[in-house]
Amino acid sequence: MKLSQSSLSLLEETIKKAISRYTCGCEQTIVTDIHLQPNQNSGELAIFDDEDEELANVTIEEWTAYEGDDFYESMERILPTLLCNMKNAGTFDKLTILKPFSFVLVDDEKETLAELLLMDDDTLLVNDELLKGLDEELDAFLKNLLEK
Image (cartoon, rainbow, N blue to C red; front, side, top):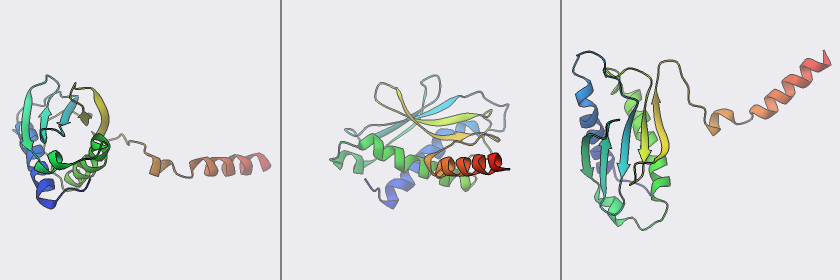
């Protein structure tokens, strides 16, 4: 699934609205996860905090027209990219949420499907791209070490 620029902008504005309550400049809030719950049938994206309080919601018309049965897999590709772009743009810099916290994708039963973005100052999420070729490098290092 590929979303139009208007849908991506709508998603970004909805995420900004959801986190706006955490930019008040008041004392820091403890939030472990911000849950993003897309629904293919209704086209709705609901965003919740740890207490299942709804922070924001929006309807994305393109989702209702999507015929594929890989909807959540598509969300696992689209949403992390959007969140990373927002992070790189500094959108999350002024939040009063204690780190670490995560943006997570959840299904209709609020079961976690994927961690979309981990916000932490000193933690790096390891992904396949980062680990590519690691086995060969470690084997070469060990062989070199044993030969000396």
